[in-house]
Each structure stands twice: as C-alpha cells, then as structure tokens.
Length: 238
Image (cartoon, rainbow, N blue to C red; front, side):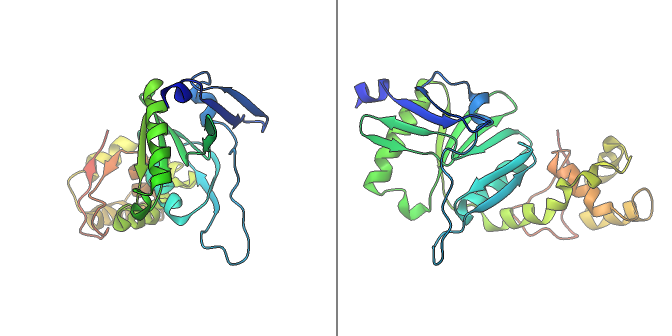
C-alpha cells in the first residue's frame, strides 16, 4: 500500500474545464479550489439522493452537490468566516487499481487546506469506505493537508444559518452604515432589542438583513446551536 500511495495520481478539470492528470502533490491547492467538478452527479427519475447547485459566497460561483447531507455542509462551510474557497467533487485520486473522488476541498483564510468526504454516520465503518478513508488520510498528510469525514451536522445550526441567508445578498452590504457602529450597539444585547434600535434609527427597512450580513461576515456572533429568537444574545466577532 505504501508503494501505491507514493505513486498516486490526481485527475481534475481546471477552471476552464480542461481535464488534467498529475502526480499527487504536484497541483497547487489554489488551482484545485477554482477547478470545475471532476464528476457531475446524475439526475434521474426515482433517485434517492437530491443533487443540485449551491451559490457560494466564499467562492463566488455555483457549486454542484450530490446529496442533501452535502448541501448542509456547504451551508456550514460557506457561513464560516474562516473559509476562503470551496470546491465540490474537486478531483479524482487513483492509487494502483483503486480510485476515489472526495466530496469537498476547502481553503481557509490562514492558507490551510482540508479535504472532506461527506457520509451518513452509518457508512463510516463500511469496509470499502474505510479503505478509501485510510488512503485519503495518508495522502493528505503527505502534503500537509487536513482530512476528515463529515457526517450529519446539528440540524438546528444548519436551519439557523439558512435563516440568516438574507445576509448573503449584496443589498445587506449596501446600506451605507458602518459595521463598527452596529457592532458597538449590538454586542451584548438580544436580537430583538437590536432590531428595534435599528428599525427606529439607521435601518428601518433592512434591520434584519444588516444583522444577518454582519453574522455572515463574522462581525457578530451568537449561539446558533439553539433556535434563533428575539431573545438570542449577540456578541462581537473578529
């Protein structure tokens, strides 16, 4: 196995859709982060999974996903202020006579790279998948990347992030209001209190969009593992 890993190859499609093949470790992460998907999930009547397209704020492009579970993790990654770029179905790894396409590749703002396979927790111990995990883990370690298997996320967290999705729209950033001014009056107060202050003052028609935009940019934070209500306390972020 070690010999096979050492001779692993990577197949990917660059941002223009041109297919390329190289030895593992020879392709820059930035090139993979802007690559087209090496595999597009099929759609057909009666299929059990739900593929589709997701607009990524971090990557500023549509990303293909092949399941609702994968879509949930795209919401989480896109919301994280530490995410710089995301690619889905980013490349195919081939080791000897075995090949595998990871689900996600993520660049973070500190320059780190993470490769994810998204699977229901029930599949984590399937023998074939465990073999893919071991190979992927070893290959990522060789080039200084992180690797993990992502299973079912907290559904409350995902729903809260989806609820705040209005903050991704450009209109939420075009209010002409200084972020620091809003953070100064919002940190430590409840969401309901902050919305009332904004609606009676600087943002009568876009108070929630403004708060949501600041949360998407990491300027305001809250405990999103609990349902978001008017009583949710906002805190200042980075």
